[in-house]
Length: 296
Image (cartoon, rainbow, N blue to C red; front, side, top):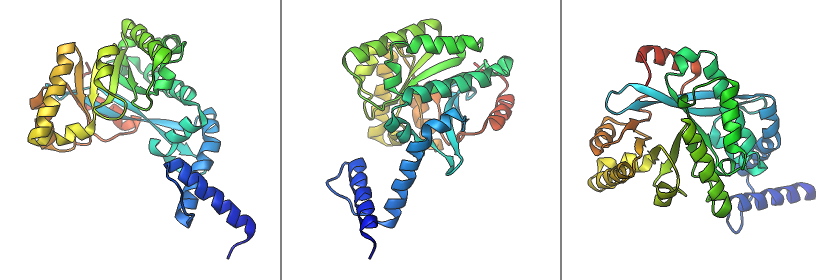
């Protein structure tokens, strides 16, 4: 009961839905059609959103497991889209990847954070700020050089910066070798290296063996399962293995007192999750810093 052109348009949308979800076929419906239209719209505008500086930062604090003091924060991006309103990473990171501008986005967010730190270095450099990077960006030949140049542009101490390796892609061969070299250069400068979501996706024990990292971030599913007998044994052994190699550990996704007790008992070094703090705007972070009475 639609025109031929509308029927063809819906068929194309169903094809794209099937392709995106990697299934043999999909049927068009109103909700799916609107979701796809929104996805395409975000993809078409995502680079312009970066150029127009439509992104802003939020921060989720990280605590020392022994003192319960804040030692730093993970940097999280948000998009204030002119057409779609405020969007979280789940809505726009796939667009960044689809368009192929991971590197542009990653450097943009890193510099945005560096600029913010530089506005009050005395207070903000006491803490360490972790910025996520796609593995495709990490394996670029000029990656380390660009990161160092941005930090020097804002005259920052390298020790207040941390690079987090996302588990978004499986990098092999020469690209992986380049990534390893880049991370070694940054770590030698004093920038911390974190391995994200250990225990899920592409993050494996091979990464522990080959990457020169500082902290292993343990996936929230392992953290949250640590309240069970089996889950606790798994977590404890991961933490012990990381410690034997010389790495610190961070348990993310802590949401209850029971989970906190379990990860501390297992020997985790750093804590992060909604049980302590949710992602917050910079004004709230500064208030939390003041209440925290000192950084690292």
